[in-house]
Every structure is written in C-alpha cells, then in structure tokens.
Amino acid sequence: MQTEEEFRDFILNGHLYYIPHVTIDCAIFGYHAQQLKLLLIKHRNIDNWSLPGGYIKRAEKLLDAANRNIKDRTGIDNLFLQQFKTFGDPDRIQFDKFDKKKWLEDTGLPSWEGNWLINQTISVGFYAITDFSKTRLQTDFITEACAWFDINNLPPLEYDHDEMVQEAMHTMRLHLYHYPIGLNMLPEKFTLSEIHALYETLLGKKLDVSNFPKKLLALRLLKKLDEKRSIGAHRSPHLYSFDKEMYALALKEGLVLS
Amino acid sequence: MQTEEEFRDFILNGHLYYIPHVTIDCAIFGYHAQQLKLLLIKHRNIDNWSLPGGYIKRAEKLLDAANRNIKDRTGIDNLFLQQFKTFGDPDRIQFDKFDKKKWLEDTGLPSWEGNWLINQTISVGFYAITDFSKTRLQTDFITEACAWFDINNLPPLEYDHDEMVQEAMHTMRLHLYHYPIGLNMLPEKFTLSEIHALYETLLGKKLDVSNFPKKLLALRLLKKLDEKRSIGAHRSPHLYSFDKEMYALALKEGLVLS
Image (cartoon, rainbow over all chains, first blue to last red; front, side, top):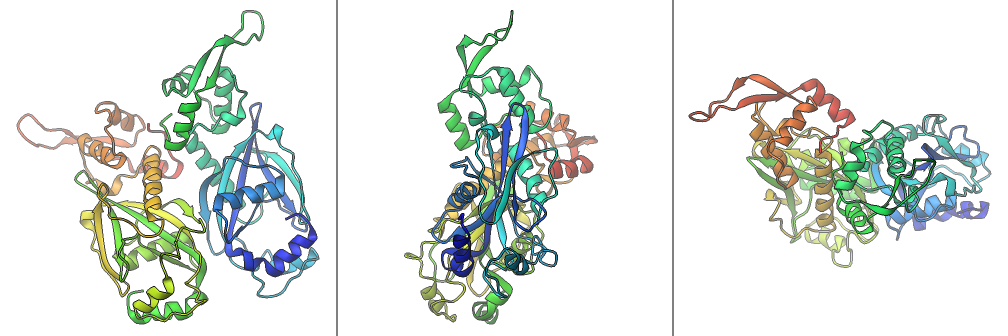
C-alpha cells in the first residue's frame, strides 16, 4: 500500500482479505563499516518513531507478509528474515494514550467505533540484517519518514517497540553463535579483520583476536584463498571467502560457534 | 475448561472473551533418568495425537494463556515456558482434510457455518522441560487421552504439529547452550555425571566427558560442595549444586556454553 486510496480501502474492506488481531513488526538491523543501525519509520501525526510492520493477508505466509510489509514501507526486498518473538500483552498498545480512531480522523482517513483496525493485536516479531549503505528508503501516504538510526542513539519508540528492539538484539546476538549471518555484509573476498569487526559490531563486544577466526576456520565455514590484499608496505593479509556449501548447511542446521 | 457445559459456552460465546484467529500450542518435554519424552493429547473423534494448546483470553498475556491451557489439559502448573516460533501458514490446518464443523457435530457440540472457531488460526509455540515422573495428567470433555511419548517414538501428529515439534526441539537445543535449563530436572545436589547425562539426553548427542563439566564450572554456574555421594567401593563422586545467583543471571541474560 502506498496511496491514500489504497489506505482508505484497507480501512473499509481490509477485514475481508487481512486477518484481524494479528500483525508483524520488523527490526531491520543495518551494518556497514563497523556501524550498527536500526531502521525506523515515522507515521504522520505520531511523535514517536516505530518499527515497520503491518497486517497479514488471509492467504499469506507470515514470512511473506513480513517481506511484503518491509518492501512496501522501505523498498527493501527479500531480506533474510528470522522470527524472534511474538508480543501479545493486552496493554502492549496503550489505547488510553494512543487513540487510533482519533488518529485516523486526524490523518483524513475513515474512522468509526468498531472498525476492524481498532482492536487488540498480537504481533509477530521478525529481525533481519542488511548492509545499510545499499538500501533506498521510501515513504508512503501514512509514513512521513523512514531512516536508519545508530543503535546506540535511538529515539523514543511508540507502543512496545523498545522492548521489541531489545528482544530482537538479544535473539540476533544469540543466533550469531549458531548461524552464519554474514554473507551479505561482507565483500565476496574478505580479510579476517573484516569478519572479526563485523562480529564484534553485531555482538557489541570485543572478541579474542586470534581465537575467533580459528573457530570459524575449524567449523569449515571459511575458505582461505590463495590471494592476498595489499594494504600498505609489509601489510598484505590473506583473503578468505565463505564455503557456500558449509554456509548453507550451517544456516539450515545451526552450529556451535562460541 | 473441563466440562461439556463449559465447552458449549466456549463455542457459543467464546468470541466475546477470547481473541479469534490466534492460539497457542505447547511442546512439553519431559526428562527423567536419561529419557526424553513429549506430552501429547488425543481429542475425541480424531485419530491423531496433538500438542496441548488453545485460545488466548482478551485480557491475558500470552505466557499466562499458555500456562492456563497446559494446566487445564494436563494439571501441570507454572512451567518455565519459552516461546520458540509462531506458525501462520494459511494451510497449516488442512480444512479440506479436517472438517471442524463436522467434528463439533460428531462430538455433540453446537456447530454452524461462520462460527468464530471455524477459522484460520495463527499459533504461538511455547516449549518447556519438566520432570515427567512428577506430573499427574488429566483429561477433559474433548480430550480422551493425555500421555508421555518417547521422543524417538512419536505417533503421527495432527495439523502442523510434526513441524512444531521439530522447531521446538531445535530451539530447545540451541537454548541449552545459552540458558541453564536444568534446575528442575536434577536433585538439589547432583554429580557431574548426572548433569552430563541430562545435557546429553536433551541435546541428543554425546558431549566430551571432561570438557563439558569444566565449561559449566568456568561459567560459575555450578558450585562444588564439600560433600561426596557414596555409590560403591572406591566410588564416591563429589556433589555439586547450582549457584542460584549466577543461574538467575544466566537465565535472564544468556551465556555462551558451547
């Protein structure tokens, strides 16, 4: 959905082709050059920022719904998304503070008591990691801004999205020990320093400089190439690439990195 | 819910106090003496077994709904439950094979086209581990049996519950590397062999016999007690207990075991 017309139809008839009471929300992490960011959107007439998300179509898989919502709001397509948690506390959206009916009115959209959208929702959280330097963000009729924020400098978030971000970070960092979530964040050939920096940034902590690459090599996730990169006099570190076969297997079955 | 009367009211008026379209399902693992089992229930007039589960009340947290459902169906209270995944594929319940309206009729319950229960559902999966020797199972009007099955010898399961069990196992085993999920499965004082056997059984694989306890000790999760257990001539292994403070911290923040 992009236009005012599409949103009007969504409010009037959405219950026919969307599942009421269930939404998805997405924590999209962005990595580039040792910086970790989070993608946020700002709805019209709401002060706080929030995670991108939306409803699920009746004939749609959850993962497809998440991908469609992210693409609709941000232009990013086909991210590798992972579920992290589902949020369903009855007071997760504080309707005493956020009057959805009034918000629809303020935004010039149809609004009436009992509309299918004005309802308690349970939200399935997905996270993804992408290279933020490669994305082109876009807004729509109800989204006035869409931007990357430094993970250590987030603005106040709407609803229960602060908790969602904490849970997404926690799960992403736990998954880093078991799934090779690096392929899209590194050039095809990279140095051990580069992958070391990626993992340190995503985990938010220092890793043993000699032990860490050894572990990756022991798991046979990396292949040492017969190539070096020249980065100065007497400095030409070896290049590595992911072993695609082992990578695919580890992505499916998990591994133990520690 | 236990009685026919309660189930009749649930079908007639449940949409007023339950959230339509959303359920929870629970994979309850049971451990005792190096055996791993799974709790299954059998509904009247359905051949296959399934995981216990049910709907969520409108003013209820997801976790409380899961606990209430498990207690209703099995008598087990206050399990330490963890979410593992939410299942929402449109064809996860194959309504062409399972006619819910007919099932309600066969079971002597009210049934009509358009009833709130005859609907696509999205289900939030929870898992837990308990000591199966300490549970007392109970049935209700629609549940004719409730039993522990050896994890390696499960009967065919209804709906998408085979996939749920696989995902629950996968997450439980991944969590074992990060959370101390052992407190309720061991006596307060235990030998290294006992905790070693617990982890091997839950992980379904052999662990290095000398390395594994060293890691637990290095994480300061275990305390070596000034006590031994006599199990025969020349055999009196040291006893250990969990360090409750470290245990609580690890449960909250996670750790890296590997």
